[in-house]
Image (cartoon, rainbow, N blue to C red; front, side):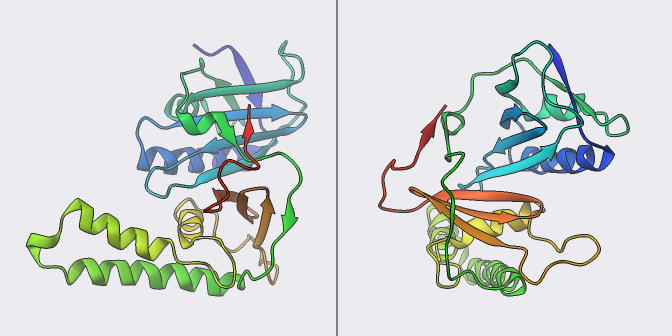
Length: 230
């Protein structure tokens, strides 16, 4: 049941949000998203299971979020129901009834304290790494005899390839692959700056930020440091 409405800045913001939700649902029909709105910004968090990363899409609101819920919104809802409520032409979306969120929805990256991390290759190089890794994965799967094409074998190959670091960073390649698959890793409209990608760190978290959204992962070996439970 829809209880309140979000007024997005324009139909472009609505279309981008719809595209993000559609991609999440492509990987998980029962996908849930966590919504956080404050002021004129809406943050949408999702976790496509194929990539084991947290995806974050921010959208501009036409006016500060209000409608009787103090000045903030924080709810975990069905991605499918949110997508169904989106009216791209009107640039509005209804907030569906809250659902029992998956475990990841209770553990988000910190809001502040992010600092730049060195070693991230240029935009085109990151895209080339993802393309090469996809080709490597397909080639290795194709070379397996039929009797070895088990789930364990496929998972092992995927783990080896997508755990590779991106350039001289600790960021696993799966974070860049997720960004590409979710539509984040693409040139900006009207030309892109020389380096539209930024790698940021806060506590145990690494975040690959693009003009279209971010993917975040926790660095191996750092336990739960830097985790924000909300």
